[in-house]
Amino acid sequence: MSKRKVIALHHEDTRAFPLADGSKLCVTRFHQSPRIAVTIHGPGGGDAGGVILSPERAQLLATWLSVFADAVIGAGVS
Image (tube, rainbow, N blue to C red; front, top):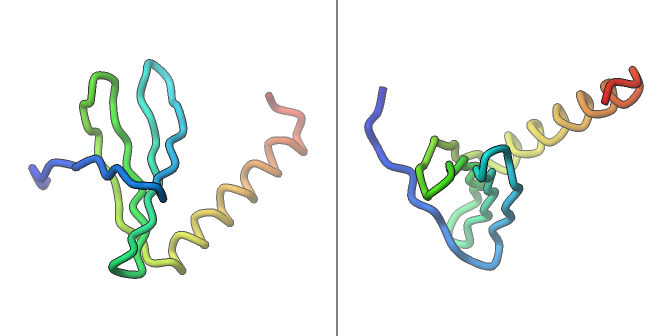
């Protein structure tokens, strides 16, 4: 397992989604390359990890999330 540190990227194309206990999921679009970072940051700045995705892989992930969300909503699970 890699011991590399996740570095928080702060710029206008970052979207943060609050998670439990003060953690957050961040999604950042890069301007220098066609990549999208999805990172998880713990409370107090502790970094849990992340991935760098190509646009195609990001769209695939978004599709999966949408399909699963629709299935949960359709099943009446809350």
